[in-house]
Length: 586
Ligand SMILES: Cc1cc2nc3c(=O)[nH]c(=O)nc-3n(C[C@H](O)[C@H](O)[C@H](O)COP(=O)(O)OP(=O)(O)OC[C@H]3O[C@@H](n4cnc5c(N)ncnc54)[C@H](O)[C@@H]3O)c2cc1C
Image 1 (cartoon, protein in one colour):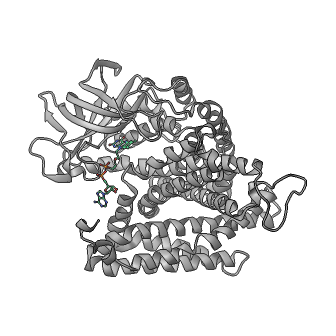
Image 2 (cartoon, rainbow, N blue to C red):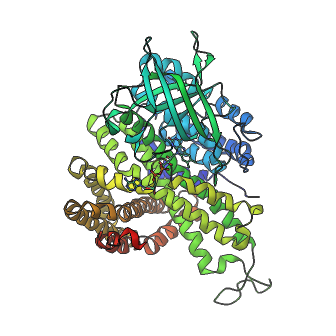
Image 3 (cartoon, rainbow, N blue to C red):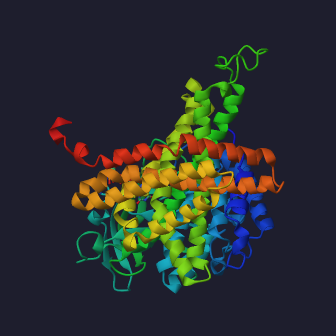
């Protein structure tokens, strides 16, 4: 059976030494995030995840949640873990997102199917908070923050997932200001379950006479039970779970077909502006899905490391490493090391990137001046498709490589590794497929405001490179500088050739997203290496941990950053060969 230990020391290194959260102690939320408080959250939260959630991460599926989920959910809710970053006025703890994100990684690592229940609530709460009326917020948020009620997002229909302009679900106005919602939604995560007193569905639907396409979509609150005058669950609403999907992974999370038959709904936000409201929820959810990528991969990686230390096969190429044993451990083989080092370097870098992204989320709300809030918001918008797309690609790759370390034993159920591969696969698909994330990056995020966010990001990276160039991290800075150059050249090619032929932009999108992910994680490695070096020079910290950071940074520089060059050449090949073959020739 797999095991899991929350990587608390690594999280603390990123929060304390790399992001230096104490710099923000004057901002709302951060005041309570004292080092002691953060330490308590990570230690207690990590223990809760490892002791209570992780043992439940087996593969049962049902609308009645698997044995143990209900009690664990009650503990999660009562412990206040769901509302860590929710505003205090609605019963949350008002802590920074960057701290809540650190905890959520442990929750996902302990059981992604379980973690999705509170995860979907958080997306729904983000939309309610951003566009809900005061009355809607007062009715729903306190119950969702405490976990008494959960939330869902209902976008997908049988004939449309990516192209939501095609949705058919209808919202007909009732005389009392509510709406009658009718239609079928599919693939709705956490659409039905037995862990909460009510389920608050946020549903995309069209009003009569609404404009065609995505400009005519509105968002509605459709609770499973209609709240009574006191705000408690009352009459059953006209929405039922028609069936649950039999799927490849995340079996412990219900994926439901939801049938709406004249269900009572309330408009959330403005008429025909539903997609914009839904995007608030989706942006929060996209970061959450990026976190799923690395959260699942972390557990797979930890178990691959344990197996490689234990399993003995063959001899080191340089001669027996342990002649007294009949064979050496898997760790002597460079090819096994390749998989484990790639996993370690990408995971630790991705953890830093996602925590940096969560910090931008906090700064976009709470930074002292408007210009800093806008800058943080734009940086976050730019990296969101990269965090969702690239980090979930990495998560799957790390999960299969960790399985590979087990050889045939990774393929059979007994060791639990094949579950991580199956669980990691969905993160590349939902919340907008990774191809769609790449299109969002090149079509919307990069060109936005004349490329201002991209220039700001490049400016930040260049400043760190310039500071590192004459110091002990000069070599790493040099590798990163080359990769940034490849990325900038790729983006320039895209700007010049994407307009000439839009298929060039479509064909270049994925390699560009990947390059940007590689560079962003490389940037985090430069920051981490410099922070580790500073602690070593000051004679502080755990020397072995810090030296491992320097060696892993070097691995990333030499074995991952060079991929940016090949991706640039691929990108500059343009769309011709991609689009040339007639459909009949396939
Ligand atoms: C387990 C699970 C849970 C889910 N949970 C939810 C949920 O809670 N709520 C919800 O609303 N939905 C949910 N979904 C739906 C999920 O978000 C969609 O499946 C996903 O967005 C893709 O839509 P689709 O399946 O219709 O694929 P399609 O849109 O048909 O896409 C098929 C392929 O074409 C590509 N493609 C489509 N359009 C374009 C384009 N314009 N440019 C480039 N490529 C394109 C896609 O990338 C994909 O590879 C879930 C799905 C699963 C499997």
